[in-house]
Image (cartoon, rainbow, N blue to C red; front, side, top):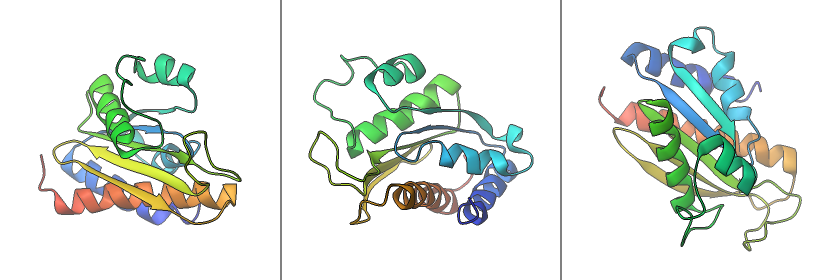
Length: 164
């Protein structure tokens, strides 16, 4: 968690200063993104909610994304990460939605992605999506790397985006 906190604190500072809010959906980061954001004092001013969307069942129950909405999409992809981020943003009426979906390891996923693959998306006044490949199957290290890159991506968007 120590590696995540400096970035989470910067994200929190921007959100609090701008009076903006965030909702998170993560998969292979396993809740580390939400935990880091919630570890910052005053999180109730900006953090509206989060979900660990790890299975088809949790996708439906926690985020409300239907099989019909998934037509033509696959998990662990940038389009799916964008859908997760947009959905969380709208379901929570947040300024920002933040999502991560991937394969932490030690093996890849059923879609053909190797361990160390994740896709990250931000939805809000501006949007961003990207793919990270760590190149290794160390599950715990990948989870930390995924969470860090997710927070860094959110920070980069906040620093580039004028206040909404």
